[in-house]
Length: 107
Image 1 (cartoon, helix red, strand yellow):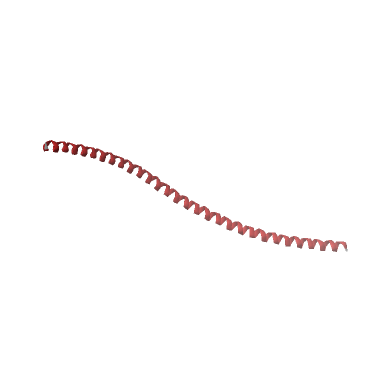
Image 2 (spheres, rainbow, N blue to C red; image 1 turned 45 degrees about the horizontal axis):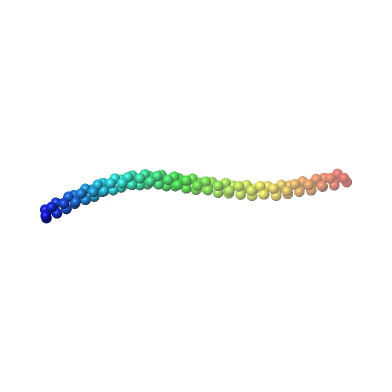
C-alpha cells in the first residue's frame, strides 16, 4: 500500500513538474516577446528624443533670428522717425524761404 501511495505521488509530482516546466517555458517565451517590444519602444523613444533635441536647437536658432530681426527693425524705425523729423524741418525751412521770396517779389 505504501508503495502504491509513493508511486502515485511520484507520478503526480512528475506531472506537476512537467506542467510547471511547460508554464515556465511559456513565461520565458512571453518575456522574450515583451523584451523585444520594449527594445523597439526604447529605440523609438531614443529617436524621438533626438528629434526633439534637434527641434529645440532649431527653435532656439529661429528665436535668436527673430530677435535679431526685431532689433534691426527697431533701428530702422528709429532712423525713419529721425528722417521724418528732419524732413519736416527742411519742409518748414523751404516754406519760409518761399514765403520770403514771395514777399520780396511783391515789393
